[in-house]
Length: 125
Image 1 (tube, rainbow, N blue to C red):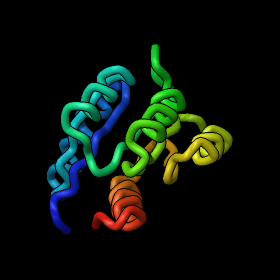
Image 2: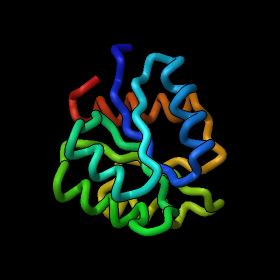
Image 3: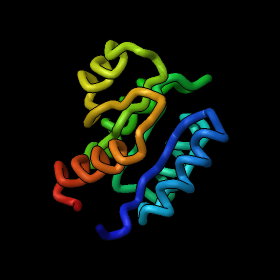
Image 4: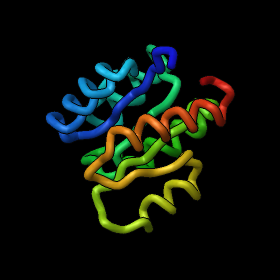
């Protein structure tokens, strides 16, 4: 596996920081953003190969960020994270153009597998 470049977006600072460290240990270069506005700035300055995006954030929510990414960076796949024990939000995100979704608590192996599949879908693995 080459070093994938992923942007993690979640307002839960401890969660996203720990997730970033765990991905980096597994050879994934993980950048972090703690809200939707910061995520959009990161995309503009240094676009990642994949975005992992929490749906529930204060301010600019995950679905709104997803729609902006689809409009401005259609080549970047987005994997949604939802804290709800329901697939409804994830399915809505996929309808709006997300590659896939995962529910929290997150399985790191499953996330890495989804990142790989997302990259394959755009020919970037």
